[in-house]
Length: 325
Image (tube, rainbow, N blue to C red; front, side):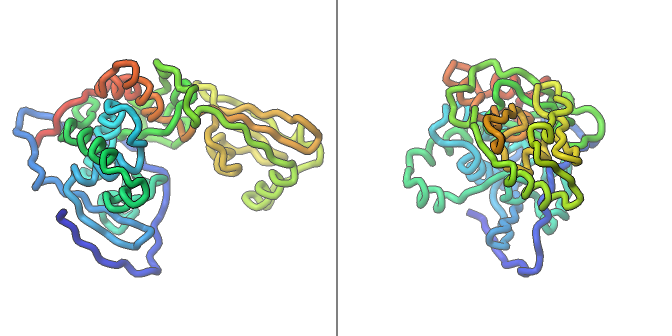
């Protein structure tokens, strides 16, 4: 492993922001040139937990991302799809397409999943899971998709993904502000049933006092009354049926802001009031809902779909092919 490490000053803090999605005009990444060799592709990675920057061969980095982002028990075609998404994500950042390297000290990517992609070393993976066969399964999926990426109109895409779609994915512009159309990140129905996964549905309950406390902490200027059943109102929905805007007391907020406020799995939710002091919320799906559903990818693999079909079903209109110089 070609690796260098150095400590960063503890006073430096990583800026964690949603990934930037502005489409830029760049040269085509797919051509008739020969494949890029391993020695030509190195990715620099910032680990905020250890305040370290490392450099890895791209395929080694992709293996560590797949190991962190998707259960090794998932179908091999799902793991291949995840590998292509992880590789495309890294290469797009290496080319400066979606994001700013100044967010993490001038390196390509970080290991914070809210900002870039999760990452786990082989040593840590084996320490936590103790399964050499699982690691070899992931390595095989990465090797069998080596140098494969996704493009749209010849440009590397921004391959966002999430745990479980709840049956339908979300438009990117319903979650983040984007500049222009991103046609490959539009809402699509999952062609397989994801309801058998634990991530599909969850019921959580809050007392009204708990919600008021969280609201006042985040919005000190908010005003709420005691009749809470009239104080929480969903104002609008996105095209996928997720909460677009909601009101709590005097505060209106977006669905993603409400999800963050209460640490919910999804904005695809229903609210009920089973008694005078309880708010019950049922969420469907897990994550922001944009792009590929990992549970959906696993279910598609089990149904006989290959990784290319999986990717094409979640990223509308993309081409899956080998990266060239």
